[in-house]
Image (tube, rainbow, N blue to C red; front, side, top):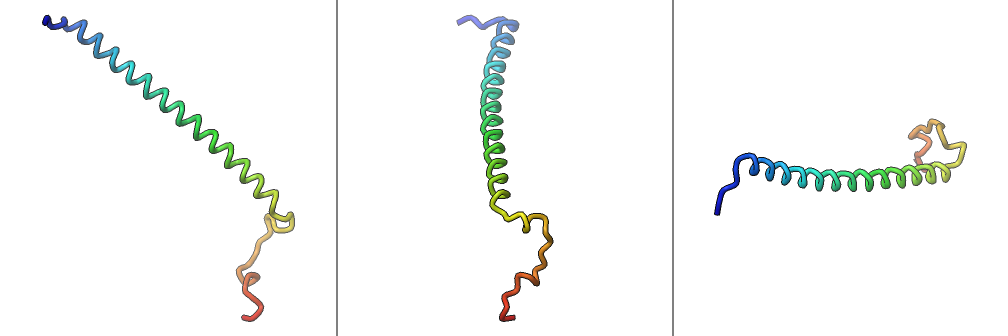
Length: 72
């Protein structure tokens, strides 16, 4: 078997590296897409939770003393 000349070998190595880089880029794109979907879902959940809190409780400072049961 003849050994490839150095230029052909370098070209083959570059093609292999390019294919690996393209695969990694595809995987990263999929990861970013899934993370963006999760971020959007969590944002919707936060909005839904805020909607469940009564208006009087939003932004109002509550002391821990207010939380003490009456028998203390």
